[in-house]
Image 1: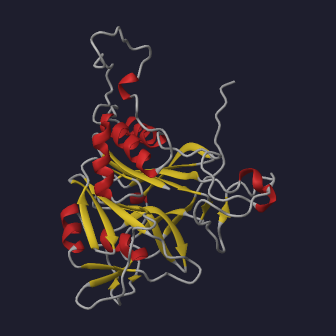
Image 2 (image 1 turned 45 degrees about the horizontal axis):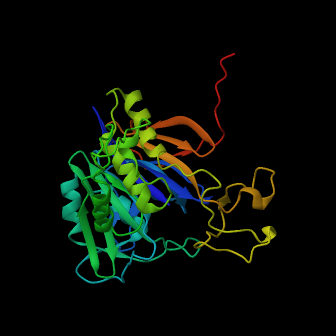
Length: 358
């Protein structure tokens, strides 16, 4: 699935990993201030804050996975399967389809406090963008220099949680994620002492034993603990290069290598069929491992970290890496015509960039 995080040095950074077994043809998209937004509730935003992020553009509309706006607010949607619930439209509320939620907030809010105000009137609905695109069960993290919140639309209503760790993954609901951190309060970046028994001559035999017990698997709960521990103890210089590099290292702790998380099995492998959750389908998808000249079953069917991004929220710079390209690539929002109406679209650089020294 996915992990989102924040980081702060001289500037404020916001980003995420997207873990999945396929790509929806995403690209870095800059939405200028006068791009015409028409929402399913009938409201139009002909002028709004500019934003940059990763999106799939469908019928000329950017469907953002995550984005940051020109005022310093970031927002990301991550899978929340089995817990997310969207209702039908209701009178007296701002009915917003789940796929419109990011531009609805980032287009109108300059701060986390303004986002909180807008959320008091919102009602998320489950309309699909089109028959080609399934309804995604999501929850969201909204972050700025003031802090972070998590927004979860569930059967018992819309929940807004303060997020003091600046990290979000997937299930379970966020309060349970936070509660589980109690199990790891003994972790430390320092060398541990012998608290087992004074009668035993116990000693450390390796560096890093203060964090012994930090979970290393790819489940959402374990990724939450690992990313929170890393993010809250991370130390770096304050320059842009040092800060961006450190952010990618933080999210690198939850990277999903191909082969470690199978989500479906090809019938050619002799299996009974698909398993381990729903397999994505539909036109326009690129299933990783099927276009490399190898047998379909050799690489397809595994969840991987499709991309990792880091946004300098203060400067409007969007950095990313992809599974097959670890070179950091950047797109600067303020080098676009933000007074225009046309989207700025940048296809991802997918092939690995290797620099030889001899």
